[in-house]
Image (cartoon, rainbow, N blue to C red; front, top):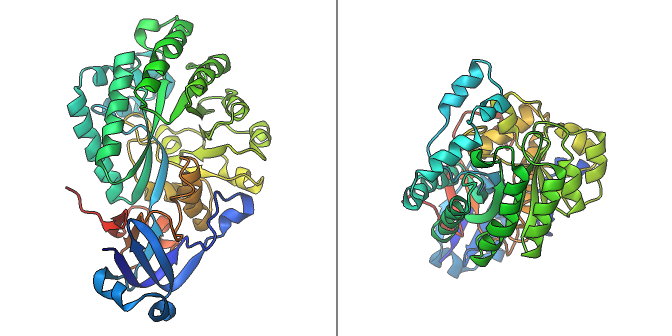
Length: 420
């Protein structure tokens, strides 16, 4: 049994010929069908089109054997894809939030043992079972907010045991939750306290112990490095990526959040699927990304929360680049997985058009997770991950109403999702 959704006011991101990503001027274009229907079967999208064609394209049997939803006055969107999160973490870090209000910088907090190192201590004190329970609460939260695919990074373990604990929890989420999950090994998220002043030895530990263990248990799809000032150098990054690639891990990069770090250049050199953050991005980085298969992923929630410069999305799009956006859901720099809010920040702070942010959180975000063939748009044969909005006047209203909860129903793998 599938779903037959009728009288959809507007079907958004509808594609007859699916695109794998959208670049430059094309980011201002989305496919829409007004007064539409959509039919699912076996977790996939079977057909869609104008309501005036439903009697010709949907058989009588489909009306009887499928659950029927009347979406009058409502919009149907493909589920958000969130290609950069750290949502497996223990506890919270609101004290650091207060410290920043009092004037301390992100780097100063990290230098006092806060930040990532604080999360690492909390994670070490938390059992795998409790970590899974906390994380599933967040997974259910982001599903309720419209996310249907999510990438989750390790990086709060910073020991072989801690990193494996995180990745096993991510694997369990992947097996338990209806949302599509991709796992990234980020042992190079920070240098742990016991390796202070011995960063190269910690890199050796990542290469010689962590990566082989992660690969042996088949716990990750991607490998990531925080290539930035005060964290890992370009040389460290090259060593780690090379080691991971030998085990089949696909590169991703944290780049240029705090400085012009060379992270974009090293990411492109090693064919990274994405380079993420990019608050510091100039002409050289844009030129480096032009004509490559590497997706720039912007995290406006982190820039907003930390008071960092906004990444130059307008300049990147005008230069012909594709742009994806992600929540960066984590306890220290972006404690929210609300992709609708990310759309709003894209419009308000990054000066992106509503159509551009829709492309950035669907098609291009799916590409940044390697899911462009199955997710990110409404197309026949793609996974039926969607959400139906409450009644609203236009698709522009979704990012415009930045503080309003606008989702009426979440559909994952062709089934109406209900928490629990």
